[in-house]
Length: 215
Image (cartoon, rainbow, N blue to C red):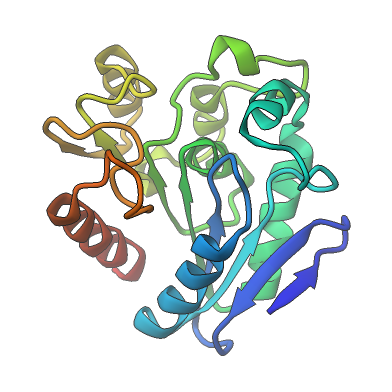
């Protein structure tokens, strides 16, 4: 079900309110059937209420190239504010967060909000890519230092150029937990249509994420 957050950002919601809630942050292409289906599946399988806010509020018409160009204009306060608002929609005594690619980067930044008890970025950028750098874009590692890094489990592939070894080492040095998949490329989990998808690793990554969020 589509709703509108107080900021005007669209969000997808599924599941019944209970003791646990979950916020899902999409990849750079935002809300679409892939994430509508994911929200519904996770609500059923993980027995929680799930809320997924869009990343590009008011710019849903942009294609991939347009979104890459607009990434530098995103503002952490806006995106993290929408994540916190989505957590209120998800409800529950404990609210977790997961995100993918750009959404994973924001999940890492969301540690600084203190709103989420456990977080799982799937191949989220550990440092802001040069092309995305803007006045409103803070560094994920700086946000992480403002909260509790040990609440984070990062899912990464060792062949992913967006999470190079030096960045992964810097993330691990904060106390964050790392689940690395040998030879996996970017976006190997969440979209079965991508050439980089690895079914076995994806299934294991989902299992680890569910256990982390539920423990």
